[in-house]
Image: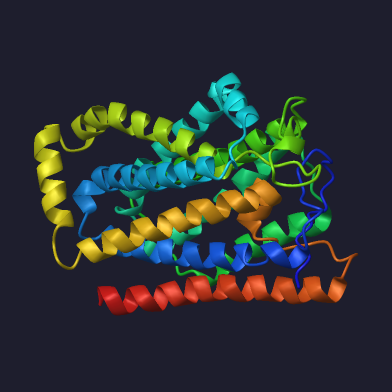
Length: 346
């Protein structure tokens, strides 16, 4: 089994050291699989919904909020959401609001820009998420990375740039800058997730307080509940997107909200589009949950990097196998997506 412990120079990162390492090994391939499904379905949807990308982002947010509310309700009934978690959320509205604002701006911006850029260029710009996450982790979490981890970042960026065909016309410079800014916002959202979990673990009245009577067992500390975080953050994200929708429509199309909604809803109802919309939303929900669980157990940068360059001083052979598996999954992601899009769009 894989060793899921994270060896980081920042000792404040929450690491689950009491569960068997094999218990969480499913999360990494699950996230990669969800990421592939999410990216492929999104790219295919951008063609028929070119002029309705904001409605797609808004629909995705509403569907996610419904799923997260249902998940939160079930976890509350099971007693997994402690009072200290609600108190922490009430005391730190700025963190959750900032997360919602980052994701609320990310989805409309990345949909709008990706729909107007060649697919191969979008895949290159997508990799700016890696250095952005590492940089923000250094700035806001005071995390340091060793030479092996930095080399892993460089290898991934160089490999993607080398094996991706750049189009002759890369589109407007403004659209490219918009796409890069969108991925920067996504990196900010990833780091904010880790900030929330890290602060909750260091909170004196955190998950250990009163834990002996919660019936879950022992003196084990629970991390901040993922369903509560996603529900609160997605609620803020939905509010941001609702407020920004009129401004976005006036700047891009100059249409009224009623006309925009009617045209977008009609486009989504097409027989060839509706199944893709449902599949994309399902893949997006799966990606959000698995990514959050990985951040909860490791770190934002480790989730983005998918542990491309793990340290090799413990269980070296198994970690080498793990590294090869991750590189193979990255290969399948890009090659498989290229083949799929070639078949679908041809």
